[in-house]
Length: 219
Image (cartoon, rainbow, N blue to C red; front, side):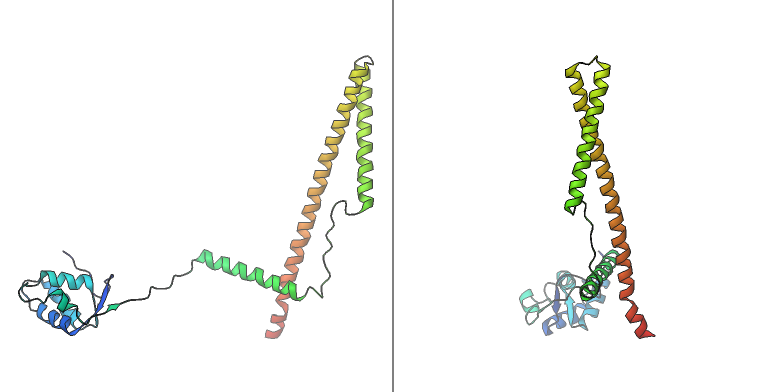
């Protein structure tokens, strides 16, 4: 049966007491032990700590008539606790920490220069009363035009039937409203893209300017 290496043995570690050292000295010449166990006992005798597993293996294989009892063997010994190795940070975690540090530096720089740099004016749709009124009139005119077109079309198709003509007008009104909604969504998405491109360009310029003072100092 293979025995663990005393240098790399894990588990419970005990400090070597005088009764334990004497037992290991006797175990070096105990013929009932294998050559490997006698070699391990000789190695452990010169150490200040001993793994419990190795000591138990030597004590179990030794001569019962000459070996000490466990109470006497462990008298005066103490447990030895070893601190675990610190965990190493992965490359992914290191990159994430670097990005978080850069974001924190940009926020700190923006906080320092907020009183110097002008505030960004974010243009929102319908931010003024004039825009709201103009958009409402435009939508109303478009829906009215759609109603007239639908009414006239269904009146010409169905021999001037009042009910069908009114239905055609309502259909034209709904189609005009859907067209206006689609155009509004397209316009809003384009405005958002323009605002995002402006903000990204301004953030890149601010980050590049934040490193300018350090470069001048080094020069």
